[in-house]
Length: 245
Image (cartoon, rainbow, N blue to C red):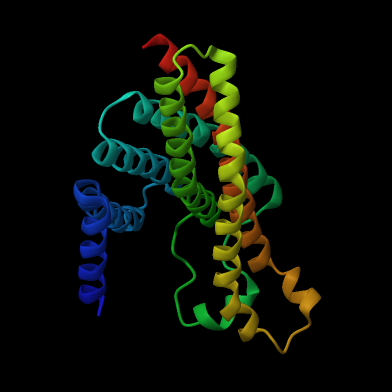
């Protein structure tokens, strides 16, 4: 079944995107295997935060440069992604420690009851690293969309100054933001459908105030924060790069 779906995806990507579609397909599986390596390295006790940050950089580099080539818009998008990751690391680390978000919640007690609890790994570092990883997809998408749009604006109107280019990038980002927020929101809600069915016999306020929901909201709000931050950062970096070229 997986092979059939992969073949259908490949055919559609090549039919629609041609060579870029093929590159996207290769990047998809390259990033998939990278995540498998990430999980394996955690099994050897390597810190999850370090692995997550390194994985995010590699994913951003492969996704941007392999598919779109080495040019101003991809370099600007990459720099923006790295800067947002650094900022988000500080935010996630600070709030994660302040809120003491770590480990499995009581809602999953029956699921994990048969496993050994003494795994010798910091669950707090794991949660922070995972949340950092969750932000990378939407940040890359938004950064490249803004930098590509600004590149087209500059080509068609090279007389625009820094202020004009920056405002154009912000306008594009505002249009992207609404769809990005909805995409993340429904992905979050879709992942909770089975959870709510599982706990339908319990009081709704108790379920909503549980640790599991808190961790998922922490992840969602972190992704949304990164999606907003990347717009002005990409607009500024891309505008400067285009005017210097």
